[in-house]
Image 1 (cartoon, rainbow, N blue to C red):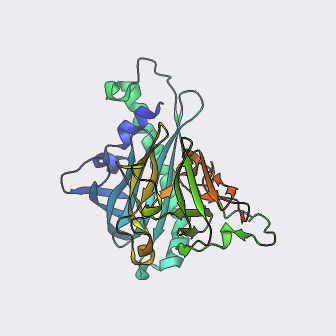
Image 2: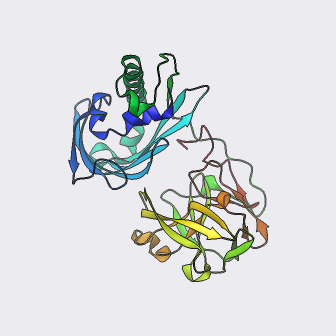
Image 3: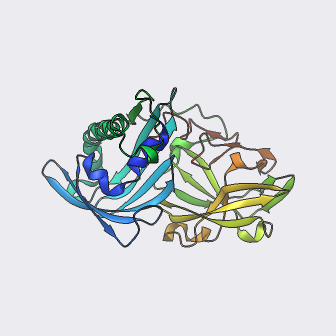
Length: 327
């Protein structure tokens, strides 16, 4: 089944109760029903436990990605990702990180709930698949889904990731491992020169950057706006949410005749731990012509969602590629 058909069902937040077994009711808060900023209450049940989960859409890329922040008694974040599979198939993944309240055991409760939640979401995604495939068979919402007339257009494959922590790569003298980085992440000053190039121009050059260190991720580098060339950054409409840093906004990056949409991001009002990077800007290295830490040309973090910079003194393996979603 093509991604457009899957997204047409997934974007109907009000209908999630029809295929999510743990959801019993959804009530919107405010007028928004789609897109970033949509907020809703979801009554959930898992065995004898009943909760009202308050959620906000923090990322919305039609046909590709929908992310939510949990802001009720259970906090954390979750994300649907859609990818093209073989032929006309679509792979849909659900990744979620939750923190339970003290009376549900906090960390212990999270660990105990993990296998239950994985099994639950496998069932949820199977039911979602059945709904989309039934819509194709019966012609329901066909114009919106762009299904055409062939009843054998493809299938949805579902996946809930629950891979164990990988074996860290060997660490040589003077190196650090991303598996020694903390979670929640840590902010620290960078004693290095950081440069970013795009379109044949150096668009940022600073010795006053910060980096954020988080388990499984190469560092993200945040640069002060005064050390970025004027006119390079144009704020876009995209938003996302980090459970530790808060709401991020994005920038289109313009330089040397090139435009890279949503290729940089920052936080206007980050949480207290990350207050020093308010107004600072991070760049997706893979979207730039080149990024340097001192004189070393860095490699971008695998995948297109995270924006870490890999240098020769940082050991992986790194989250971001296929199969690493739950690291």
